[in-house]
Image (cartoon, rainbow, N blue to C red; front, top):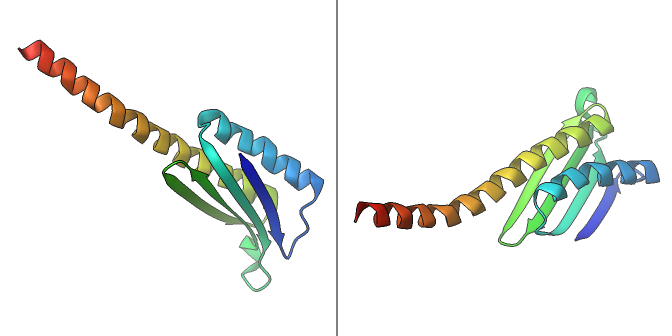
Length: 115
């Protein structure tokens, strides 16, 4: 898995990098077919003061790209919200992949019982 963490109007400190890595572990624990992850942390200069800190992530998997973004007044809270949203989307994507394969298997079982 390739991981890129970058900052816009912000220096990515080792503490921020470590925080993002620990939060990403939860996502990769749910779904291990992640190819590439790009995280962008931004401080908006001209937006309203309440939600100046923005975090966004693009996660590339085999067959699908998942994009999530959040904004909050605290960057760590924005990262928390971002990883929660990303985790929900990854789990939903994983369920769709698994449901697709199980649906044909269920049809075969139902056809075999009715005969």
